[in-house]
Image 1 (cartoon, rainbow, N blue to C red):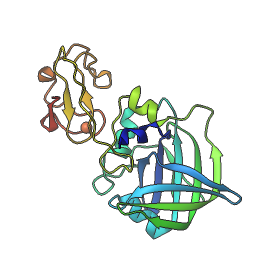
Image 2 (image 1 turned 90 degrees about the vertical axis):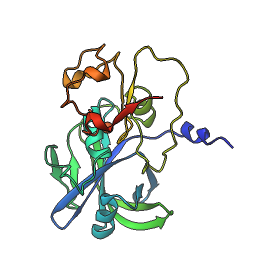
Image 3 (image 1 turned 135 degrees about the vertical axis):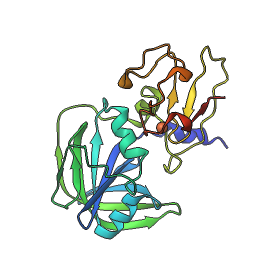
Image 4 (image 1 turned 60 degrees about the vertical axis):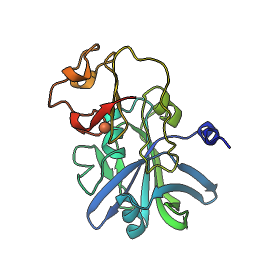
Length: 229
Ligand code: FE
């Protein structure tokens, strides 16, 4: 059996948001798909440990905001590698409250679906929520981010809580300069590329990064990095 076969399944990338009382939370998910057209319904698979899971269970509503292809890693890191138990993910993000009362992300998104949960399925580590679409719209014209594009072009990683997580295999070829991996989110600092978002020039070794440099995806400090082996 070769589970890499699973990687040939195509997905998109979404922010799934919900509410609880007057609090909002959201997370990145790739497992969103339309289930029926009459009535229009949509399914999403969410890890039981995630705060968004708790919010969807309590409120019975969720919003799927469809990310644009050019979404910066920072936004994906904010929603995908941080917990709403520690930060307010919507603090510095443009959004509006939808008819369900859950937030619709308006930054780097091209459309959204608002849904009321009509069914759910316990699949062990995760729950599949099926929602009837009660509101939906295009935010702006553009191409959606695909899971393949996120991994192959944006060099993004999946957290271990993702339903589609597969342990990464380390490439065998020799490295000219040492790469360092963020142990929190899996981001790889490549000295040849630098980190343009933080003004780090290409060719900067990890050791020469300023002490206050943080992971551009999850915000972890240098101490949370280890040499890629
Ligand atoms: Fe990180």
